[in-house]
Image 1 (tube, rainbow, N blue to C red):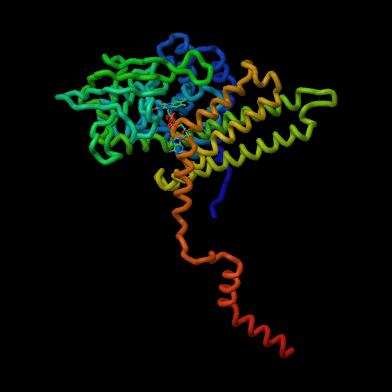
Image 2: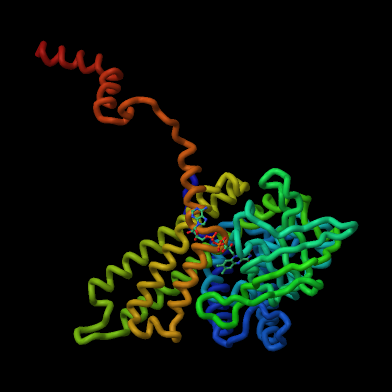
Length: 433
Ligand SMILES: Cc1cc2nc3c(=O)[nH]c(=O)nc-3n(C[C@H](O)[C@H](O)[C@H](O)COP(=O)(O)OP(=O)(O)OC[C@H]3O[C@@H](n4cnc5c(N)ncnc54)[C@H](O)[C@@H]3O)c2cc1C
């Protein structure tokens, strides 16, 4: 029976290298005030390019991709373990060539793109020479595709796009956006939309404003307006009407990587909490001596460990089934648990740091906002709860019985039917003795 929780030693060596490299070389970049996605910034490139070269030399570049695209073809379990380390730092995914949303965008161009599209967009994207955005959610209808209003109409050899999108992350740095637009309004509900590669410098592509998350002034969530944007016909991505299916391809692996990066962040919060608990003293010794503090540390450890196992087990199942649809329930569970665990641990870490914890000199307020982002982005928690519950309920059939078969009287009756004879025999024997 195979039931093994150990990482193979060869891969563990790679993880150890990554861990030291991220802590020593990459994490300090987070504090320099240069955005990791600002690929045209020469200072950023001077710092990042040599680190990316080291990652490539270690054979750890863009590991989410197969060898045909320059990756390692690692399965989700290995990627999960790697992302746990990358989660410590905002810069780490960029340095390792696996940053969202470029990963998902590259994945779908690799899957559905033409040779021409790959040459023009995929290879520069994989080399982090350019970055991209995914322009799906709309200000009115959020991310429910059935409410989308942005339209693309075929006129001769061009598609003409009109509409507004919202929270197109990294639009301001992007070379192109993948835009989801209604091409067949009268089609079947999930066959109405298509995807397009839209170069950002096309006339009519406008960033109305860059929205920030939390109190961040320098936001990177593009509020987009597309006004009579003429896109060459061959910029359709995949087949006409195929946007919904393509978008599902994009999200499966990404959710697991996000979850593992969250494990990395939550671990960091727990580390800081413990560090503070043993260092900060009150009149009768360190905070770590107080049972109330110990309880918070114990609860955090359990929540983190349980969540980590759920994520790794889900990653393992994806590798085994090789079909995201068969693991939908598990992926939904991961998506639901992720913000809860992160927020709970970050909040306790903040609290144990007292005034310092709420200040802008600590990462906790940002972490808590980050947890809320995770509960909203890529579909709110409630939607995933519905998915999970439906999958669980599939295994149950309704019963018309007045009292359930599992009521104790009914169970006793069933047991008597099965073993009654034997009981009678036993009683007869006892009476004879
Ligand atoms: C930081 C960040 C980055 C993002 N990046 C991108 C991106 O790059 N590209 C992109 O296209 N989009 C992006 N999004 C948008 C994201 O996908 C949407 O915000 C998300 O899907 C929710 O849509 P909404 O904000 O319109 O919320 P709404 O749909 O208005 O939902 C608001 C609330 O209503 C409730 N609710 C909604 N639907 C249901 C339901 N079916 N059942 C029960 N309750 C429900 C929930 O409580 C939910 O939190 C990003 C969002 C964030 C926060």
